[in-house]
Image 1 (cartoon, rainbow, N blue to C red):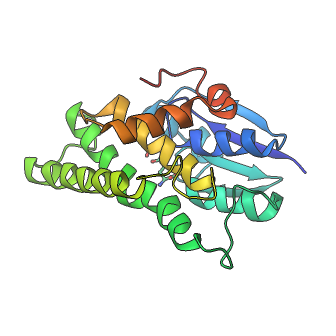
Image 2: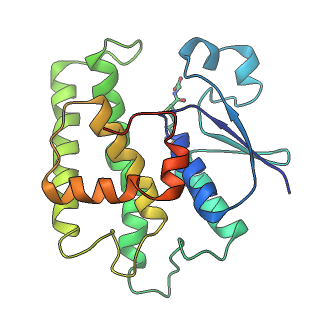
Length: 207
Ligand SMILES: N[C@@H](CCC(=O)N[C@@H](CS)C(=O)NCC(=O)O)C(=O)O
């Protein structure tokens, strides 16, 4: 087995690195500074034709998309207590947050962040930026309601869905102006104080 992760501090590859650390799976870390020009270069496109991080190689098999990589690792290198199966009561909630953290949150945060800093090619209309902000606020409100009486997203404890969302909350907190409720703030602190998160986030500020 040989796993290689292309990672940039502060980006979605945090999800994959954090999961690998939690699962204690050995891997080679190729940490590269986030650089749009390099990511678009022929050199990097030869590694990942999408020109993005994360990119995971399992031998010569490339896997992209952070949540797909997480599912790949959980299913291929499990069993792991961080994975939740269809036979479990909280399977629906698990799958929902595992994916919503990216498709229903981080994608909107990325647009709003890029727009705020005039990043090419992220410039969008005021109307679309407001739409993205609306989606982010709505998801945070839903999260607030789902966290009531719980330490993590699931009653049964910490899971890969918390890793997926932990990155998203980091992205929101550090890149766009967003207020977290006390419940979400406590949840975020709980996630970021995990030993595997501390290793993964050692090169970035989480507040
Ligand atoms: N949905 C993808 C998003 C990946 C992504 O956009 N990564 C950013 C860093 S957070 C990137 O590499 N952007 C470079 C680019 O799109 O040119 C995932 O979850 O892996």
